[in-house]
Length: 338
Ligand code: F42
Image (cartoon, rainbow, N blue to C red):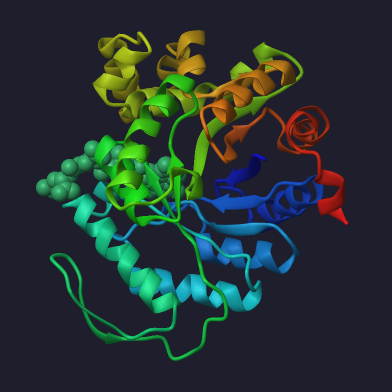
């Protein structure tokens, strides 16, 4: 059975994120992912408060990166969270958003080795073992936490490019595919299979997550309006190969990127059309969202993460997911609530 996660971007005051986390747990979401960008509220502070007010939902950074946060600090943070909410913590890790890394002059050097070594550090340290590692990126000697960790912490790797997807399947407990459209998810699955085969893992044993931009409302126009800013950013940051896959002119994507860089929001957002929303989000009335989620599930996805903006009105949209979408995919929501 497919599971559902919800992504929050901690741009709002902490109590709003906490309020929505409580609501998400209550209606039956399985996972809560909070994004990590230095210019938003701190991910671990947000997670700690949300975890203290929830009882069942699994949660973790979705995703942190090893350029801004050393993997030993990530290990320390998730291990501390496990003391607050035992057995509910997961760790999402990725190469990091290039634009925000550039703002603090951090180069995303050798992302594949960096992620590979980071996963080893986080896994070993959260398992309570002392680690001696002379990697090409990280060198740690006799590194160990001074406190005990009771539960294993699954590591999910955020990935988009073919090599990162392959690596994520090879070394991760789960893969967070940054895509909403079946064509992109299908394409990602090829690399995930390759990664699993490379190390003799069963494809079925991997937790494969579609991390989507999502907007649900009573009608398409309202949902579209809410998703436009998010789609503009995705179009602006997408590689040429993905734009071409969806028939989006590269020049138009450059125009949107330039407008965003110069803060010309009206120009950037007015260039977003239905085709772009179709390519980079799940957006529309409940029956449209149900159909699109169904296609991703058919492709072998185990978890759907409904990501920003979720809808024009967060509270109403979360309730709409509960009343309209979950009944099509979840039989046990009622049981989980008790
Ligand atoms: N990023 C954030 O900063 N914060 C978030 O909260 C966040 C959430 C999130 C959720 C899901 C998800 O899937 C991604 C998310 N991201 C978030 C984005 C994530 O951090 C990455 O930016 C995103 O996944 C894109 O990275 P990628 O997986 O496509 O990997 C990049 C680095 C890439 O170019 N990959 C190439 C590939 O084919 O996969 C490989 C590049 C390569 O081969 N590099 C070589 C090497 O050795 O590593 C040489 C490069 C060199 O330096 O020499």
